[in-house]
Image (cartoon, rainbow, N blue to C red; front, side):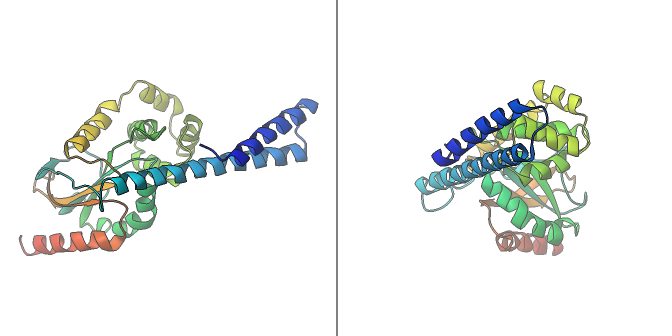
Length: 263
């Protein structure tokens, strides 16, 4: 729900813009300024909604107990054919279950993932996998996941992934099309893919597996060693929430030391 004052201000700006536009085809500087203010109001309202969503997720965790729920991960998880970042010969894997509209996922993407990339992914030690877990109470999370998977058909999954996390409060159709255009994607092909539900099977598979593991919040991570064939991850650790880099380091380093010693 938007703030009443912001909503009233937005209505007044719309009315003012309509009146000014009616005076002539070319907007005056005053009209342009009003339009700019209108856009700022919409942006602030979107940010406010993002904060409210974050509070809702915190309340869910608090109601669930003193800490995040335990993940019932299987001993082995297949990653055959999945997109990843990192070296093909890396010995460890991080599998993230996330939602493009989740503020905690965005915090991880902006604050922690860059450090993990520098320390482990770019150095050839870890493969990073992203799996979709769009939460039902996020309006645009499913369509954003579809857009990213459809961008993968044009070789731009990670570019779209990063772009979507830049502004999780702006994930409407027009916003996604703007991002896709900036990335040089074929918009017609992207729209046909999304409307046809082509990536839906992959997204649903990820959601089903997450439900089987009793994952009910984002982000959630599986961390484990990679089998010699590169297609299986032996899950050794789990982590729930947007933890700082040190929390991941505490789980990754012992696994790397075990691999180095032949464990």
